[in-house]
Image (cartoon, rainbow, N blue to C red; front, side, top):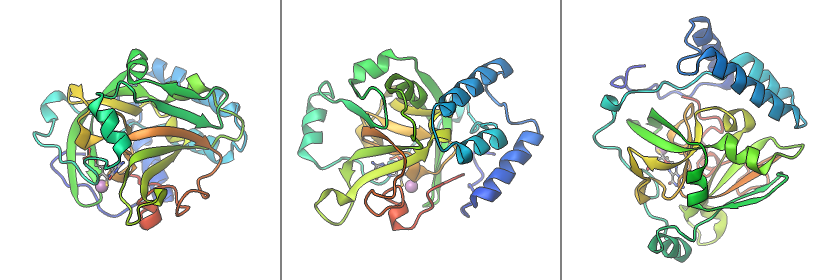
Length: 269
Ligand SMILES: Nc1nc2c(c(=O)[nH]1)N[C@H]1C(S)=C(S)[C@@H](COP(=O)(O)O)O[C@H]1N2
Ligand SMILES: [Mo]
């Protein structure tokens, strides 16, 4: 993909997406950035984790068929001079204002749900964990793209710290901003991904952007980057990571703020 070429606006069905991934793999492009050895370790780790959970069928099929292709990564010179902020650019709640004023020292990421050891992690604790940085292209369905550099902790590490319980299938991200029309919590932004994307090596909880702390407009102090999917999946202002067996019980039942308003749950690029 060339950064100058606008991305395809049409959304692929999961079937088309899978077929495209298989084609990519056949073309030998499936191991872009991970060496064969890292990949084997990564694959084994994913398989081990999945083996600990029930309801393996969907997940293990995807694992076997897709071989976890990576989103393209770019170089420093490809960084977009301007990376637009979209959707919320400043959560309105008093809680958020207080945390921001305290430079997020009192902020904690809650990790709960179907986990063995629920966590409450400070930014300093997250920053002390092994990090990954990646330069990738963000594609918004509204028709714009931008290339940015993200630094953060692989979600897999946070999940391993908490330990998944049997039955875990999805990871749900609860955000601080309310985009809805009503004043109650039903308009809070949220997103969800499955375990395959959760354990993908490029899926990170980012606290840095383009070499600085993540700006408020881009989701401070922590946002999701799930690089094989569209912009609306990249949840900003993440406050809580919930591991669950389903997402149908949440809000509109479709797994995300925009999904509840008609977007696809799998926003593949
Ligand atoms: N919490 C939250 N996350 C969000 C949004 C939002 O409004 N609130 N907008 C989404 C959309 S549609 C896009 S394109 C990206 C925009 O990310 P950016 O502001 O860093 O460009 O964030 C996504 N994640
Ligand atoms: Mo978007």
